[in-house]
Image (cartoon, rainbow, N blue to C red):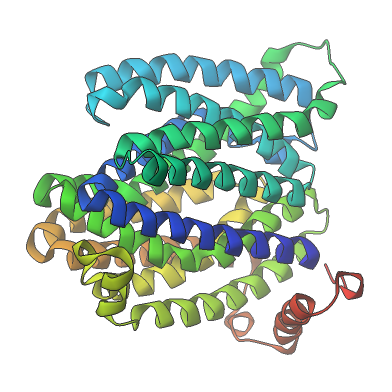
Length: 428
């Protein structure tokens, strides 16, 4: 597991570096208004992926347990149905600017297809392959974007959308190539019973993810409504910088989910989860503290004058980011043990906080209010989820303190980072 975690962290850190370059290029090329438009487009695509999650959300859990070809057929059938409904929805509800409706619909379908492939690969514990696909997708975003911005001088949100087509299609093609070998084993048994099993579990995942996405991004719509799209662009940059802290948590949770899904020993899973929670809180706390105290002048120099005050926004988000990192580990434990409904409940608790405080704090305290709202929402989700985990795993207060085995895990990770691959040990 350590090897997969390190591989995932290293790739995602590199991806985050490339993503930061893209954010810097975008912020200087198209300004706050363009960044606001892009954030709405990406949010719309993520909403579509959440709709497909009623099936794909449980794929990782079911890949070791069901016929993959049947899962593939069911997933794509559901995705196509959602594609039609989502296109109709956007024609009547202004989720994105009207001229981008068709673009966003097609991009959403392609990205959702790639997501299906990658979850199948994750269920097979092909973590390095999934990481490689993510890297390819990012590379095919950066290169077309640079060509459009600086060779053709097409500096607009539309150029970013065109670059997304290259990115998503590359990810789709490469991921499909790797999934093909798992589709050869056909199964002639009825699809509907499989659909029922997958949908029942996937519905909890999808509803939880939907509420969580609203929890994460509802403030975007509040900010656009109360403060305007330019201000939304400023906030989106601060969010992207602060959420770079989540790279470690997401990487560990990604591998953790796959591990727990295939693990037979419940007690081992609990001990791994407890250690990872403590490790992630420490690491996230260090990173977000550094980001919070970078002077505002540096952010302005990097992202342009439109984004002054980013450090204060990041500071207002800092507490929430730490606990959100820990929440990801608990979520992956519940998902890996088939208890997706616990994640849904904690997401809903955080969403209620965002809904109530966002309407109060954002109009009054603008972007700092949005940051405080997010922090309190993430904290609420963590506390609710940790109470469920404590009850489920019989975790005692003594288990919350860092112990020798936790230190050994930290050391294993650090040692593995700086040692040669053949010297890696795999303690889990």
